[in-house]
Length: 74
Length: 447
Image (tube, rainbow over all chains, first blue to last red; front, side, top):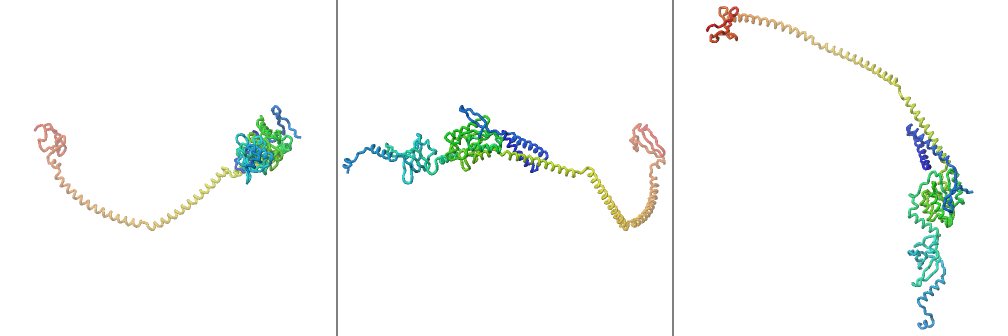
């Protein structure tokens, strides 16, 4: 469910930036939001950086069992 | 005439005649193409279909047997105009003839098109296309199943788009036949299989390149439609070209016009996303900086406005000083004013002094007191003379003067009651005798 929290984190980050720019926050609130925002942005970027390319192929053998192997399209 | 008929003509029984007519008909029309509109279409339990074929002027009874119906790509129904291959047959027990259909096609449009419309209507009425069943497409899938031909352009396009937009995503290709008789079974099976996988994908892309309606038949099949509907994993379809809509598209959670477009819908643009987050982060830092500046400024401002107690005390001192001054000034004015008033009153008073009157009254009082003194002296002299005369007169009546002449007064003791009668005294009573000079106490000795 990492992608679910990714989306939530991104939405919250956007919301925090909007609140920060609208400017009715107290200093304490602003600091708290800032920390949350930075955490979220780091979290989102980390997830995006960590993923690695992978293409596989799922096939079913004659006996009905499934096997996964690298997919070669070329 | 009758005799002639009997002699020259051949005599038929009903059966032979009917048989001959049947023979004639069936020989004359072994197979024929016929066009008309179906009416009274009915399929009893036997599975054979009975109906009439008509045009504006005539009507023929028809039948199509179960075995022939299997080959149909659409479902015939009343009101439908068809072109069909049939042979004519006469049903001897009832003497009626009918068309036995081997095959039929909807007139005008192709049978696949009709089948498409029919299935679409059926599935729609069962709610398979409704939005409530549409699952949301994950924002960021970490694994996507691609169900398509393992060799076509579609899979290459998808891999290409995926690499461009989000290279990190795990694409798991599930190769299937996308056309031909087994295609629908393979596709349905593939959807079912990936739903059962232990490490499930977040999303399925069901794709195929463009083709004729025959080529896309599998994607218009009820089997595939139901498999898509049953899938727990959201499905994006990307079948054919822009304008092709398949049944699969209607059931899918999201429809893309092409395989490439499906991949674009399935995957966010990673670089754009990173850019967006970086931007947000910069906005956040900038916003925080501004916030701090704002508070710093506010603080400075407040600091300036914050008075030290010394200044407050000075202010107060000044105020007190000023009040003091004003008070003194006011007091002075008051005093001067009052003084003036007093002196004015004094002057007024002086002009109206009662001293003159007082002196006058005093003289009168003196005068009156003097006459009062004189009056009193005169009166006193009169009274003195009178008193002296009275005294002389009084002396003549004084009992003491009687005593001087030798009388005494006897008074019984105690009580000092003057004794006038001897009976009033008892033996041994004490009697006081008042003489001219002194007194004696005596006792009654004899009576």
